[in-house]
Length: 281
Image (cartoon, rainbow, N blue to C red):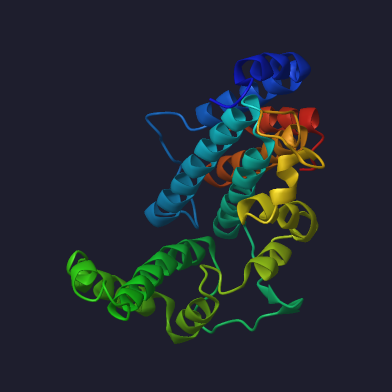
């Protein structure tokens, strides 16, 4: 344990009692949003691939949100912020896949359409899946070029399955989209900033996402000092309101996307949460 951790947790519960209660209620709501057994109402634009990607990302978001809750309650604000950055990326991926319409822009300019490959929800779900296949192939290629991994490392992988999966993905996407994804090394064919701007998350990217890169990439050593020459290793309230505030807005966005596309019928509850959080719907 960290110094004074037990006492600090007790003080944090008193200091953020209302915030922690609301955070916990939202966490329970987000998990309960997906009923089991799950029955999806089929409609145009929705198929098994879309549902699988959407549910996979949504479960990931719920787990990240729970992690942020635990870190915040433990007084580890900078670590909660780092995980909130991950939740931002998950939310962005979910919006890329499930948004009714997505217009990709690079440096503010709309990318040309690809003939015969419109960016429908179904196609975007396949782009997301294809990128993982390309990522695995890139890893395999790097292992083959890395001393010490050329033999033992590569032998541990199912190289044929990786190569076949990437080849299949290329066939699904076509030459142009394959080239865009491989060049950008992303599921959208865009870098993170352009993807965020295309998804109307530009302000969030330029503020919250940039600031949370500091604890994520270990460039915030100065934040470990409470004052000059005084290390701050004990849990503290620093950064906790910001982390739980941003995380709450992000998980609600995820709830809204999944509820809308899978037609779960929880519209009124989500509107109520948006009012409580002061979020724009």
